[in-house]
Length: 575
Image (cartoon, rainbow, N blue to C red):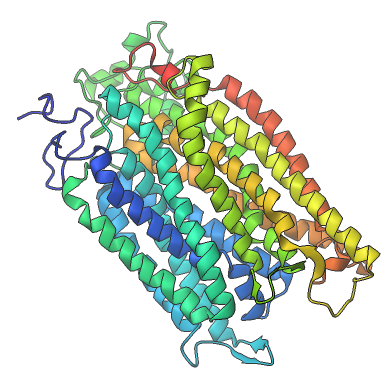
C-alpha cells in the first residue's frame, strides 16, 4: 500500500507506527481538540506564573522596578529563544510528537520546583512586616526553576502549532483551507488559558498566596500532558528530515567552493534528483527562484561532481531554495521584534503603571494590576471569531483571496494597531501624572492615585487587536513559507521575535535608565513612578513602531512567496 492510494494522505505524514496516515481515521479537526486543549492548559500554566512575575520579583525577592522588569523580560526572552533548540531537535531527530512529550517533563519539574520555592520552609524567603529578605541561595533556586521552565516551554512552543497544522493535508484543497482557520482557533485556545491565568490565578497569588498561585499551574500542566497523549491514535506525523543546520551549511560551503562556477541561463541544468520526492526526507521539491543567485552555484554540476558526488560540494535546487526561504524570512522576522517589544510591556510597564492606580471594585474587592491583562485576552477572544467569520468573508469579496488578506497584509495591519496601543498607554500616563500634580501626590503616603485602574483597558484591548493580526498572521506565514522539513525551525524563528522583543525591551529600559539618571536625576522609570515619566518611554516605543511599520512595508513589497513543484499557478493567491 503506497502513499498514492486515495485512502492515505499525500503529504508524507504517517501514523504513530510510521505507516502512511489513513485520511479518514487520522488528522483533520478530529485530532485538533487534544492539541488545542494541551495548548490551552500549557499557556494557562505559563501565564499563570508569568503574568504577575514582576510583582513576585518585587515583593518576594525584594527587587526594584528596573531590576524586576529586566529579570522578567530576560527570562521571557529566554523562553522564546529556547524554541530554536526544541525546533532543531524536532526537525532533526525526534519529530514534533516526541519532542513535545520530552520537554513537557522538564516543564513540570521546573513548575514543581518553583512551587516549592514559594511554599516550602527554608526555600521560601523570610518576610517581616511585608518586607522579604531572601538569601542568595533562595533567589538562585527561583531562577533555576524559572529557567527549567524556559527550557521546557521552549521545547514545546515551536512544535505544537506546527504539529497541529500537520494534521491538515496540503494536497487536499478542503483540508488546506481548514488549516488557516486552525491557526485562528489555536491562538484562541492560548488566550482562553491566559484569561483564566490573568484573572483567577493572579487573584489567588495576590490574596491567597504564591504557593497556591504557582501550584495550580503545575497541576494544570499535568492535565496538558494527559490531554496530549489521549489524542495519540489520531495524530498524523511528519518524519524528521535530518539536521537543517547541516543542509544550510552544505549550501553555503558548496557555493563558496564554486566562486568561479558559472550559473547556467537554463536553470533546469542545475542539480536536482529525478525522483518525485527531494533528497530531504518527507519534503517536497522547491522550484528555483531568481533571488540570491550567488547561492545557485551550490547546485552547478562541474566535471568534478560528475566523477564524485559530495553533498558538501554539490547540493540540490531544493536544498538551495531551503536556505533562500530562510533568508527571505529574516527581514520579516526582524520587523516583528519591535512589535514584540511593545507587546512585552503588558507584563512590565503596564503592570507597574497599574500598581499606582485605584484598583477598587466596590467596597470589598480590589483587582490586581496584573489582572488587567484579562482585557487583552478578552480582546483576542472577541476578535478571533469576528476575524474568522466576518472580516475574512468581507475582505474576500474585495480581494478575491480565499484568506481575505495576504498574510503579509494581515501582519502589517497589526503593526499599525500596536502604534495606537502605545499612544493609548502614553496618554493614560499623561493623565495620571496630571492628577498626581494637581493633588500634589508626588510623595503621598496614599497607595493609589485617585483614578480607576480600568482606564488602562483601551491600551490592553488595542494590544489584543494587534495580536490577532500580527501574531496569528506570523504563525501561519512562517509555517506556510517554511520548507517542509524546516517547519518547526521556522515556527521557532517566528517565536524568536518575542524573545528578541523582550531582550530589546530590557536593553531599552537599561539605556533609558542610564541616560535619564545622569547627574543625580531620578530618570524616567524610578521606583516612585509619581516622580517619573514612563509616558516618555511609551512615546519612544510608538516612534520606534512607526519607523518599523514603514520599513515593514518596504520589506513586504519585496517578498516573494515560496513555490513547490506541486503548486498550481494560482497558489500564491492563497498566501
